[in-house]
Image (cartoon, rainbow, N blue to C red; front, side, top):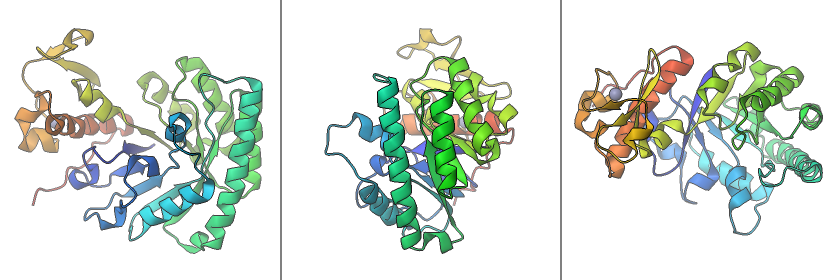
Length: 303
Ligand SMILES: [Zn+2]
């Protein structure tokens, strides 16, 4: 299973620290002048999502498929990595998942996907071997997911993602949606957006899910949580705010080969600065990836 670390502009640049790093980057998470191609150490794979979930809750003017596509093109300029372009989907709001709202969201998602495919071909992106388009499946139940996935397949997409799962709390409901989408498009062609629950992730293997993404390393770091793997566990930082929420706390770092523990060990358990939070995120990344993919990420050699 391929793991994409979900990245925004204030997070550590994971690909500077790890070989073969896969990153999901959203146009909503970077400035208008952001150029991924200018990065010295390119990720192995990049997924440019549409930022749809962010736009759902933003108060700005509505975004269009063509404006998102133009921004993705700007972000892609000079990129030397395998890159996935996602179309602008219409997520189903957790506050309104009625049948009518879900139907409208699916219709808008399909309309955008169709426009995206036209733009993608008009710009000859289908001739670039580095690139692949991804269709986002929306729906609130088996029927709507099956319908949306089937329509997207007819448009010629070969890679799919399943959206609107992040706000769900019931693992059985999440797994049911994933199962239906995998039945239609094949798990090996399916990306699962924004899933952080380890109990759900551990079940993805039975559907041979291709990939997933998560912001968990940085989010946990912000909440002063420290991951270790083999077996996977989460510690609070002794004496820090909310430390009593964790099953155990740490006074000293444990042995770890990650770039943070190798070079800036003292930052791991420091709190209250962006520098220490990002250092902890780099450490958490190591252990989450090792746990999810069963192979440890390879830290880059410091220069
Ligand atoms: Zn570490």
